[in-house]
Length: 267
Image 1 (spheres, rainbow, N blue to C red):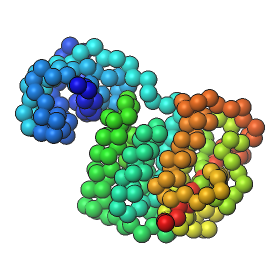
Image 2 (cartoon, helix red, strand yellow):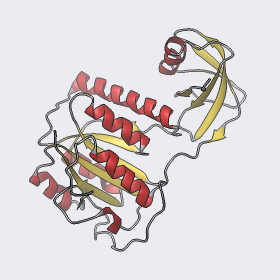
Image 3 (tube, rainbow, N blue to C red):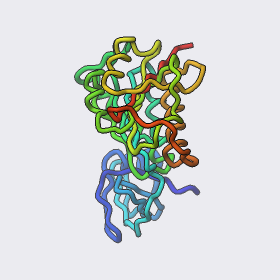
Image 4 (cartoon, rainbow, N blue to C red):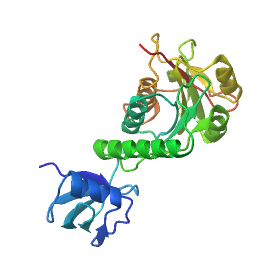
């Protein structure tokens, strides 16, 4: 039987006993219906995996005996900050889930000019909690050591300010001749993804003014939930832990930042 891998925000100490936080406990006790004596693999974002054995379990409370931690080496050396324009239905869930699988560091939902999703107050808080849950499940499934943080919704201006600490900032844009492979390998990358129909010309110009570099992934227009997956896969291949890094041929821009306008289109 496969040993479940569970995220908990509880402190974990080798040889100690730990009570799982509410979400983890309910998943183990209510959903998986696990019993005392069964084994788990826990992680809490400190970079380790912790083998554990359930000592007591109910539908709401689970206590475990923690074993010897094992270093988790699945985190990419490349930090990726994703600015993902809000989208309807399960498209945003898909983007969050796949971004976590591709090694994203943090995700910033964006409210852009052509975005048809508006979130405020309690509704925004509820969606943020939901997306964080999606991120946790994805991290559990793909074996990551850390769960990426889902930040509050930002405007384009707020996002441009927030991403300034990234050496390379990209906005995916299919009407450009810039290619990812021409960029010197960075340690931190910011990706800006537009909504269905793409970012407006004004938003692209604003991003470029702040140092973002428009980059094309290929001749085809990608949907808004597909674009981040394709872009991050390429970034990880070029500069991260998927494949090897090629020798750079073009230096970064004067500002040290680049923007990618990834336009999506519904079909």
